Structure formats: C-alpha cells, structure tokens
Image 1 (tube, rainbow over the protein chains, first blue to last red):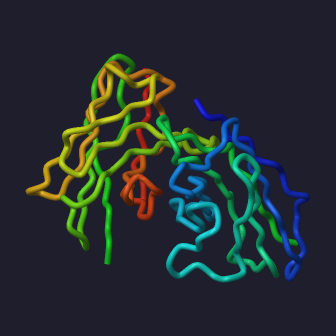
Image 2: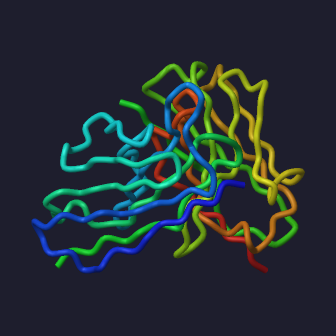
Length: 112
Length: 118
C-alpha cells in the first residue's frame, strides 16, 4: 500500500499569515499520463470532508485562490495564503494512483 | 445540487450485520463510480470500497474483504454497503462519496455513524 505521511503545523497560526502543510508518499504518484494523483481535502469541525485540490495543483470548483498545491512525485505542499477563520479544520492528503486509496493522518489548522 | 444522504447506521453487536444506504440526487447516478470512506472517532479518513458506474467492478480494502459488499441500484440512484461479521474496529462514521473518473472524491454525504459494541 502507498503510505501517506503528513507534517504538522506550528499551531496556532496567526490570522492573515500563510501556512504550508506537507505530505509525502511512499511511491511516486506521477502517472505516465503526466498527471500526479494527489488530492487535498479540508474537513471543517463537525463537517464532512470537501475537495480542495486535485491532480496535485488544480483547485476544485469554488475553492478560494488562497489555496495552492505544489510538489514533485513524492513530496507535496498545500499552501494557504492569508489564513482566515473559515480555514480552520483538518487537512487530509490522499493518493488516487492505485488501490487501496490511502489518506494521510490529517493535519490540524488552528487559528490564533 | 448534488446530494448524498446516508442512512442505516446505529448500534450493532459484534458479529452481526448492518446495511448502509446512500440516496443520491442532483446528478446522473449511473454515470459515476461511487465509494465508501470511513472515519473512526478522532481518527483519519480510511477508504473502504469503490464500485464502478455500472456495478461490474468493485474494490475493497483488505480488512473488509469477504465481510463487506458494496453494491448499487442505478434505477433508484442508491448506493449500498452490506457489512457482515462486524468488529469493534469497524466503529466509525461512514461517508458515501462520488468518485470522479478515478481521480478524486468530489462530493461527500453527511456521514452515518456505525457503532459495533456489545
């Protein structure tokens, strides 16, 4: 199975500051079709997860441009510029390259 | 508006069975693969099973293979998860999700809680 390892945030993050969340996969998620099958989800307190970023760097519909995804085949970063109250929650990375689909353990963002 | 509404959860004894349902609306259900993802209390997300748009292909995580069955009724736009021989470690909130072309889960239900305990 592909293991997804997420980094922690130095919480709490001051409002208006930027925050970067890292995720590492145990296998390259770069497919021969050129797409990197790494997704990011945000789960706000008490809510279901919502898709933020897919194919490593493509924002989902309706997602603020304060969110950006980048990386290589195995190392990925979700950057949130100018953190706001609505960004509070747990961020999950996930690989969609192969079965079983696997998630990272989640990274919690708290606001100062 | 896409909606996924799970039902069928609750308290069940170890070794017993339970069937979850997910009613889909707001999109052409038969065009999309669907999946179940669970989250144990205070834990991360865990993929459980996926079914193809036409039901001919199914995929399971190892820990539920042979115990859980994912299925669908395209005429009724409903997804199912039959869970047999339940264990305490199956205790979790179960989410129904839409699989967009084997790329990502783009819509999620509100989740249904399953508690396995005597």
